[in-house]
Image (cartoon, rainbow, N blue to C red; front, side):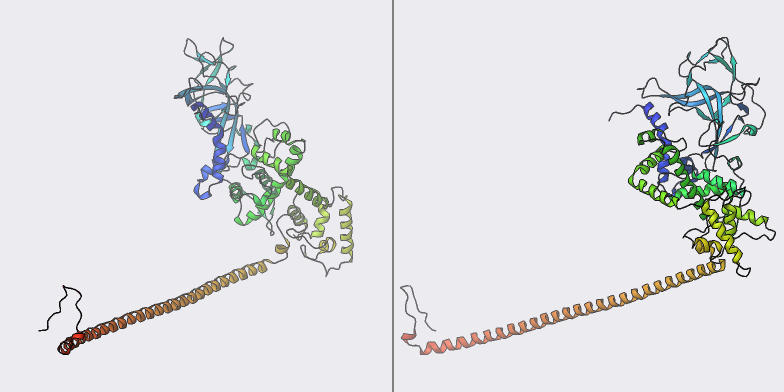
Length: 588
């Protein structure tokens, strides 16, 4: 593989580093990555602030559009930056030096890195400073002349860099010259205003990108998005753990904005339950930065964001997937507020057999819901408003809440199914006595008698959060159950430890017994072997002694017999001569 030129490597690094960092940090545990690094890797929030003016570094800056009809001028900027200069595309020895970049300020935005840090960026039209005489030149008085028809880093290409940090810029004054193609830049005097103040009157907040907002765009909550880092908003909760009060609308809409943030809540999952826990923890931390909220509210917050996340996918499929006939067209028209990799995953999943089967199941389930309620308020908020209207401060029962939320402002009912249920409620109320009246959330109240038992995981007219198991058990009963569960768990753990200890003792005793038996057998075997060897040695020694004594006795007896035999022997008993050399020894 040929070696790439440094200039090409630098461009590839600038284009791919942010994506690489985000993927790399996602696969590393939270305790191994500092919070600042993880926040930068995830990227800024999709909610940003836009300014028409900004004061920093002792200068007052305004965008070019803001000062179009003004006599003063504050849009000229200059940045001195370390730059790698290449003689050609194949140059392998670039020169690093300070280069002055001249431009005109066109936009000011403030990025929020999930509450941990805010960064102000200036977007400018930059003059091409690569060649003297083309974009810049000096006149005979030493002033720098720039040609704004020769622009550079316009943002059309991925590797363009039209943005700079606000802390890097200095202000230059632009003056027209006799050369219609060039303008002269001179240094102005810094202002004495406080550094870092912004023009609040010209600030705006947008979600999903910065653009001129002339139509109904993404949801915007300026009060929450522009909140200082050291300040939090309060939200009220009812006894069922649901948000209510005058900040309810801002709170739930803000959760919806977080659910549409692809970096916090990625869309490349088929279910909210499959979204990694690390992303949910980041979302919860983001919520706690803006809102004064307890840890016990996390369950409801995660359920709400999960529901909004599901609705966001449903909206994307309706507006951007079904509009086109082929996947090639769908992939070519990726929504601006969706990550390209997430959109590719969604298109592939929705076109798969699994995705089509889930779509059919959802259609069948949705067709069973025929009693739609009116308004966009939650049941918890409607219940709270109705409770405030009652003189006694009592909450309405579920049947009353059903009637309230299924009638329009003119008193008409939303559909025939709802009208039939309301008619049955009124008939039962007419026959019901005061003594048999039910509480507002009784299990067998009027609504349950008409519509039947509740489904698992939800209760009609109660909204998100309460379930049948939590609603129809008193808090004391739940606490007692928790205490009994903890006590039972403690007893089980103790019993397990006891059994383990007894089992270990039994195994140890058995093991010792086996070892003792083996040692006894081995010692007995060794002793028997040694005794056998010793007895054998003793017997062999005795046999040797006996043999030696017998041999000695035999030798003595043999000599005596030989003498006696020689004295009485006859010629016949003597040995015959075997030859001339044979001699018979004489007896002496």
